[in-house]
Length: 73
Image 1 (spheres, rainbow, N blue to C red):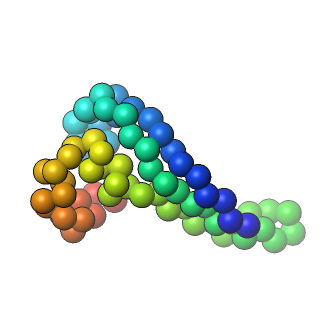
Image 2: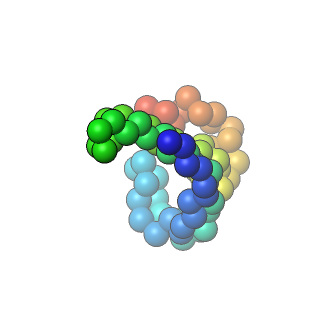
């Protein structure tokens, strides 16, 4: 089973050790679930965290690139 959507929120607290910005953001996401005998046996979730961080912290993150933040994920 596959689901996709958009998560949205406001950065009111610390995230990945980055300070709160009080800015709103939206991030695309998907969730894949394998069900066997009525129970979830495998689940994968993925969100567009890099896009979310760019919305919250702007060009600073863009100039650092993804590798600078991936150690925190």
